[in-house]
Length: 616
Ligand code: ADP
Ligand code: MG
Ligand code: ZN
View 1 (cartoon, rainbow, N blue to C red):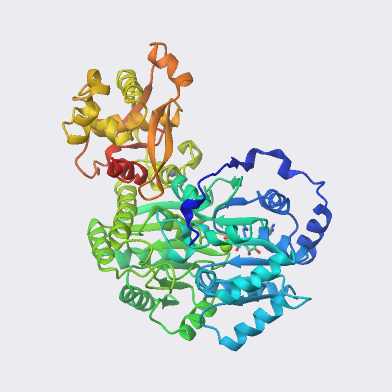
View 2: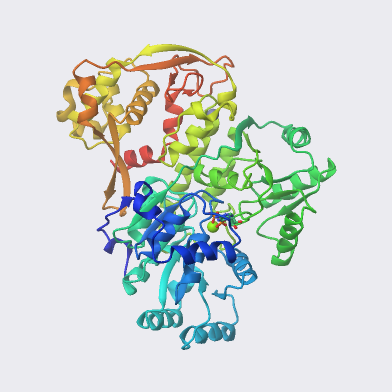
């Protein structure tokens, strides 16, 4: 059985900086531009679309990280149209696929799909068309379990491949490959078979959410070779973010919020359980809103009806579980409200991403209570949380449920720390999760944290910074931030003792420094690139963890006493700091007015750090 771990050799470069993909003199450029206008009705390309298309048309394996609504579909539909053969598209949800096919057929692009719940005769017909001499389909969509389980399909693909008519393999929502993602699907892991069987067909992997470890997993599991990666900022400037304490008056708050800010406008309210959806919808109806609910236990007709009413603006507000939304493409969603805690930062980012696709302002409000955390956690342990799709029951064969739970809990904790943190810029906190640096100054007070003004004091933390860098250096560059902190604080845990000989002189040097502050300094050093967080593969699960290294060049001045590190410390006027107020807040962002938090809180949420700690 071909498996992820057979493809270890990965050699990729970040393509976004590579000017060659932006060129306009590829043999297909004219045709591309003409069809973009004529068939798709677009006047131009959006950021990275041209580049991605040029790279995949050049036969490269390509990995695309583009925010929801960024226009990923065009990057394979347009090539499919101008290539002679068939493009295979793997997509996780039948509802998504149907939506796409509808649009393609409207544009007169022949496309079909295969899924397990289709009549066999119908499937046969499509397969027959595929192997006919003049296959009319430009795109064939399939669900991942089809690839994993259908030999008939594989045979037809082999046939196409042999006739050099398998143009391209597209893996949509590619983050589903990874156990670290928020939407893991075991069937995606078997997609490595495609590159194995069809080595000459370029693969195009698309996702809106990928941390460094998810990216690594995807590249490995799909067996991408010498792959070009395109990523663009995940910041959505037109969205406003806030987290509001959830009280008993939550429904009144929501009602008021909508009436004050988005009266008669269109929005989504994400709820935890099916029952919540129904209750929230009912309350809103009582308050005079045009609201309806949407969740996984409704029958498909009902769901389709609600979705249709919503897209026609006959219903303004949908109260839904996360089952609603993947691939939903309504441009004028003016607000996304989370009635309870999302299950991960990635999921949250994606759910919020459904707002304001037309580029106009939109609000994302999250109602948070710690008791919801307990509730979600309990539901996770029971396996009763509705997932991003209706394909339930996919936790399983390839992964033991203990690890599923562990990953889910880590992701959830990340979300808790995001909510508990009412000082740091929300954008900063989200983007850091995607490995993106964001200067909170650029938030321009469009999140609740930045909106609050805070007084700042500068604090010299050079001593702490120097110790930490020396520690990372003496630890022979092999430990996670959490481990470094343990040593710095003088922990006597087994693992620290085991490696103590390397780090003896600095063991306990930071006894009097709050752990949160020290971690904050580490983060700052990482942002300044004095320390580098390196992603390391671990044989154990074939996955990745992150370790700290010293960037000798940048650390030199600090270690030689020629650089001081000043961080802005603030005092939070609201006094509203969870987990006990630490006496020091440090500004990480470099921007004056924002970016303060008691760092241990946000550290709890860093899955990378937690993971590396649990590995040790
Ligand atoms: P994603 O898959 O990245 O979430 P989609 O491919 O569904 O995004 O595209 C989102 C919307 O953007 C669609 O309505 C699509 O028609 C539109 N779109 C994509 N590319 C362009 C473009 N170059 N110009 C105008 N609209 C575009
Ligand atoms: Mg998409
Ligand atoms: Zn902000």
